[in-house]
Image (cartoon, rainbow, N blue to C red; front, side, top):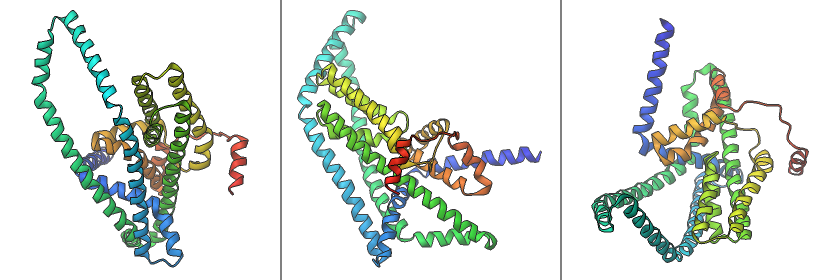
Length: 357
């Protein structure tokens, strides 16, 4: 009976947590993004403070660096997108030609005339108007979310010691030292993981840019950035970015050699990523098994939509790190983690590592 009651309590708790995450979406998404970015900049902020730079100034410099990086990336993408818009006339004509062919196909196989098809499209104009209105609403939410993320980033970096002391005060006096060790260890590994992921994305940008440029892909930098950012979503992210690149290149009349070159670039980058970059940059800090990776992505999408997909893996990784450092939660960390194998890295990886240690 006691076991049944305990199980019911756990199920109710899980339900309340999921409901809370869903209902507090507008508050939690910017907070989580701000927290992840703050953890990413924490070592840089601490380094500046060791150089006798006042804390408020160090945090402000971190904020300026973050905004400069975002603005620089947006300017780069806008430059590439402006080049893409130069091909809009070509793409529009191809779309019109394809639409005419579809109309003829529907007329010959289903007997629906072109005028009837046009009337059906007109009937959907209200739906399109609603779509445009929802798009503008989404842009407004993105802007407000960005402002909140920046504010949380600044405040979490500045008040990190205060938040840490608050968490220590919640712990019993007998376990305060253990709690401080858990907080320090979890924060350290989380920061290393986020820094490694960021370095990985930058390396992928560089490799995809070089590969796509050699192959002759138009707007290579744009597609390289796209492939690198989608790396946040495991398994399907990088494949999706490469597929989009292939489809756009094919729409522009790319040759089979160019399309094959894009696929080869993807294969080479994946090989370098798996055998060189991941052992060197990410290391063994966090390994999440495929089952929980997929579950995290699906649950993240259900609760928070696209931001949930982006945040799912970093937040799951941090949850695993926390579980690994709390004795009573270690089984859950083991469940989330990758199955351990006695895999010995290649000798050249160990040799490269020795150059930097």
